[in-house]
Picture 1 (cartoon, rainbow, N blue to C red):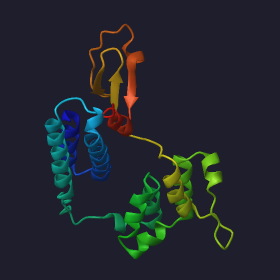
Picture 2: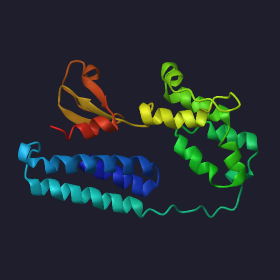
Picture 3: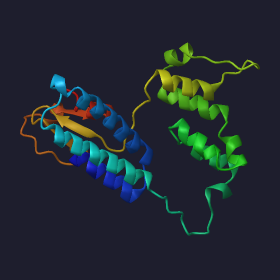
Picture 4: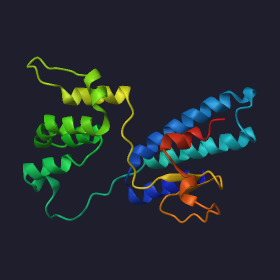
Length: 210
């Protein structure tokens, strides 16, 4: 919970990565709700009131994230829309989430056209999913062209995304503690690197399951 609190505060301060942490908190809250309902099976360790208090903290964090208002820059210089279409499309190719492309395409008609670029969605599919997964979900238009955008969202419903993070949690199997990858961990093992395993967001949530 301390780690989560630090992550939420970081998001509140930087106003970045709001959606991923909101999804993480939502999944965690749903998992805890299921565990609390199964208290008769002794699936939770500790006083139930403590877990209820933790769930209230999660709801409070979610409310704080919902209240975030992105501050628009006051600089009246060049904006993204002032760039040539080729540069705008080049920047779009750097986005790794199709939902961001859809949101960007809703800004104005010109961006809406660029956001429908077939090559853009093709590369997005190939980045996140294996060839065999793509072949199983082929969708062809009336003109005989592959519907890469539709295929992307269909693949998202069937397979997990390729995970990528600027920093990850690590679990030391020797010391049995969690720590951030970019921080020094004073492990006493002879080979500390062999004892460290990365923990994905879903893996972090799974730590709450007994």
